[in-house]
Image (tube, rainbow, N blue to C red; front, side, top):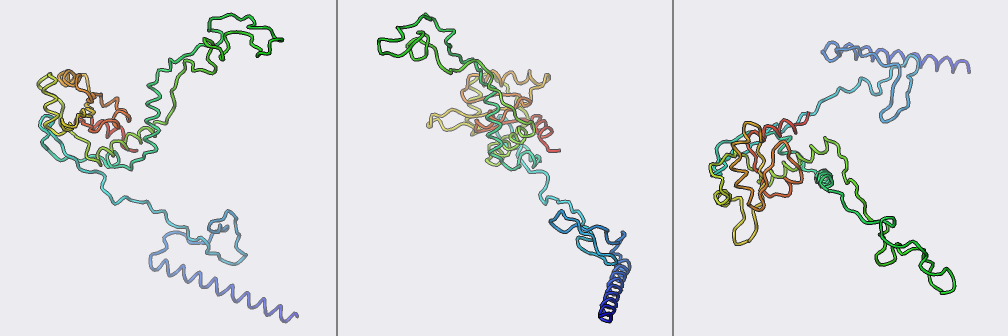
Length: 305
């Protein structure tokens, strides 16, 4: 028995020496080939893949599980950062130039669920909440007992103001309150990017140099919109659906007076400052027309960090 134990101990020591020799040889080769640039000594505590359990290597043995650690690799998008769009003339709809716009703003993934959240938020903000019904304390009527408690075989009524009577109060009716809901700003910005990307993908985004027009007459603007192809055919009986989104700055708002006066009496045309852009207003119009300054403003606001 003692001889067997000595033989087993001798075999274990030989295996341990062979393993240490192999580890030293591998390390030396890595240094020679320029592969190893850091200390490659085995860690004292190992962690198996997919497990939180710590495994300590046996004394005198070198463990190689999860060692050396994997190098972190940053993912790089193969797509360019910009996409191309036409710069059009506002009065004639003739192409003037090809410009580059941010892909992250005008070609981002279209999230319909996020757009729904933003539209619900904006619609709730516009609800007045002034609905009201009169309660029992507000209805006119006597509070004396309607009829004797017993003897007639009828229900026990204590007042004519009860909801079951004609002219009585309303049970659980609406009262004045606020319908406002909350949404994170980053979620709303993502919805705005989705709407702009949808307009760009459907060729419903028109970028113009400026929106200054010479005439303030409604007929001239209506004729221009019809000649530019932004209005449906007259035989359809449909009104144009256009959202004009210029940047109204103090120094340029005077130049847009003619546009504001001319578009005031045309159904289906809305004029809004680019700094006040809303997801729902852009979404409910067929065409979105913005000038160069509004484009730069939206790209600076909506470009992800």
